[in-house]
Image 1 (tube, rainbow, N blue to C red):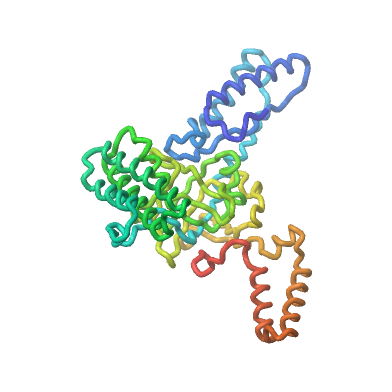
Image 2: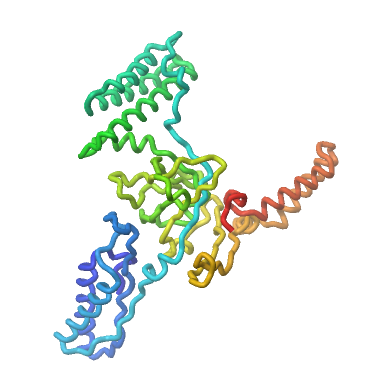
Amino acid sequence: FHLGSQIADIQVLRSAVKEITQIYADLIERGLNIRYLDVGGGLGVNYGGDIDTPDAAINYGLREYANVVVYAVKEICDERGVAPPTLLSESGRALTAHHSMLVVPVLGVHRPDSPPMPEQRGMATEQAAVLTRMGRVYEDIETAANTGMLLECYHDALELREETEQMARLGYLSVEKLAHADSLYWSICREVLRRLAAMQLNPVPPEQTELEEQLTDQYLGDFSVFHSIIDHWAIDQLFPVMPLHRLQEPPERRARLVDLTCDSDGKISQYVSSHANPGWLPLHEYHRGEPYYLGIFLVGAYQEILGDAHNLFGRVDEVHVYAREEEQGNIWIEKHLRGITVREMLSQVQYFPGDLDRRMSEFLHRQIRAGRIRPAEATRMLAAYNRGLDGTTYCDTCSSSPS
């Protein structure tokens, strides 16, 4: 019998095992020579660690799981006077989840609250009245003495932002002034949230949660949710995510990890976190040009085989790592398996390499005959084209990728 892939509550398992054992005893009494009882899967994985995260934590361990199954079967069999069966388990998730992790390079960050230029806050010459009022709201934050006054500043900013957008749609506000208003709005939001967070309010006002959502950075990762952690998109499965770099520094940015696809669902929207709001992850300030990697853990169960080729992102590079005390660093890298190439992925959707090469060569020859390019340029272009087809379907981060 099978209850599901992840049973979080041990009492659910206990009840089901008792029920199936009663049926087993009934069948034995009716003359069926049953020798095996398969308790299926269900042995859960504690994706949430010590954090009580809904749908991510289990309230038992491996020993208790085994004790419950064995004791429940024996108890019923003794009561009914039937021989106990040989027990089988198919605990695939618990056996495989921990064996694999996904390493994600961060390619860039979008911050909605980039600080405005200093002169923008005090622009007075030929300034629309709505912008003047928004500037006053920003100044009022400094003198706000309590939570109510801070929230009033935020509410005023929301109203004024709506007014500026309406004026821009009607042609009464230039794009420069609209940009100025947008910059002021985000400055107000950032300062209001900073002051509210410092107050450590309990309960947290809804506006603070709303501001945290608005002021969350988007970290662009070199991966695809739909290929490597599809259960997060499909069934809201949580996976632990954490930085692999700069672990001695406090992570002070609110972040959400988004992938390379053009789909708005291509993001990790819920995190295993001790924060009241699990919709963001604390990460470090991103420094352009410096490698910054994140690890997504416990993806060994189902993800690699379930993943699809959304936006033609294929299999990632794979490294087999074993723990060995006698090895340097206590690890041994057995092998590196290359991920699928652009050429291989295109062939899966009926764009065959031979035909692509022929069409590209014919196109370049036409350009040479027309005098648009020289033969040497065509040769370089064809070589670059083939290098691209033989490369990975993801971004080329070889300059900073781990070997």
